[in-house]
Length: 428
Image 1 (cartoon, helix red, strand yellow):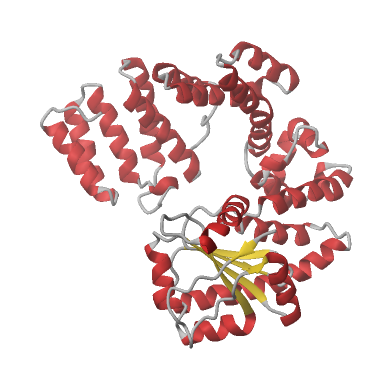
Image 2: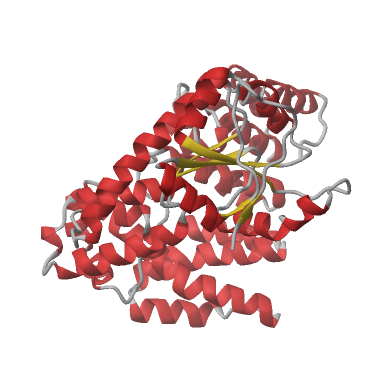
C-alpha cells in the first residue's frame, strides 16, 4: 500500500493546504468522494528548488485557491537524512516505490493524477506561481481528455486517433507500464487485424518507429518491416525507415541479449556466430546494420579503445550514414564517432577516416540549428580541428578552431583548445 506523508516547512494558511498522512487507497477514496484531482510533490531535503517551492509557490494565494479547490495535495520525501524522525523513516519504502515505479530522477518532481489515480501530467524543477498554475490547469484538461479517450478504449475502439493520444500522455508521464499495455493492444487489436501494410496509415508506422522498443520479431507487423521495406518507406516518405525500425528490434532481441549474457559469463560474444545468425534469419543488410553497433557497445564496456574505433569504422564502411546527412541526429552521431576516434586512437589511418566523416558533418551542419546533446556547428568544427591537429596539420587546425569560436556557446573550451594548439601542446 502506498503511503504519502505531509511535512510542513512552514505554515501556509492562505496558500496550499497539504493533506495529512493517508494511504493511497484513502487518498483515492477521498479524491473520488470530493471529485478532486491529486497532486504529489516529490521532494528531497537537500533540494534548493524544493525549498523555493515551499517558500515562494505554495504560499501564493492563487496557487492555494486552485489546488485547494480542485486537488488533494500531498508531499513525499524521496531521500533520506540523518535528521529524519520516525514519520520520515516510515515512508522510505513508499518513496522508493514511487521513485522507481514513476521514474523520479530529479527534484522537485511534481505529479498530477486523475481522481481515479491515473498519472496524467508531470513537471520537474522549480515552477513560479504562474507557471505552476498553468501546469495544474493543463493537468486537469489532460485528465479530462484521458478519461474521454479511455472510455472509447474500454469500449474496444483501437483507432489510431484513440491510441496515439493515450500513448503520448502515458509516455510524457513516463508511465512505461501503460505504454507497454497500450502498445500490445495497438499491435494485436488494430494492426494485426489488417491484412496488408498498405492499409496502415502513415502515422501508424511513425508510431511504431517511435515505440519500437515494444515491437517484437514475433509480431505480424514486424514481418512487414522485413518483407515490405520499400513499401513502408514510401508510405512514411523516409528512406530506410523500415530498416531502422526492424534493426532496433533485432538488436534488442539478439545482440543486447548476447552482450548481457557475455557480461555475466565473462567472455566475449562470438561476433561471427551472431553475424551468421542474423544474416540467416533476417538478411545480410540487418547484420551490417546491427553487429558493428553491438561491437562498439561491447568494446566501450571493455574500454578496448582500438577495437572500439575499428568497430566504429566498420559501422560506417558497412553502410551506416551512407546517405546525405539530412537529419540532426545523424549529424550529431557521426560527429560523436569522429570525436571518439580522436580521443582514443593514435592510428593515423583511423584518424584520417574520422577526419573524412568530420568533413561531411561540417559541410552538412547548419549554424542556426541546435543539435542533439546541445551541440552546434562550431562544436563539429572543433572536432575537425582536433583531428587535423592530431594528424600534424597544426596550421589548418588553428584556422578551423579560430573559425569555430563564433559558432558555439562553448567559447571557453574552444579558446583553451586553440591556445594549446598555438603553444603546440596536446589537446587530448
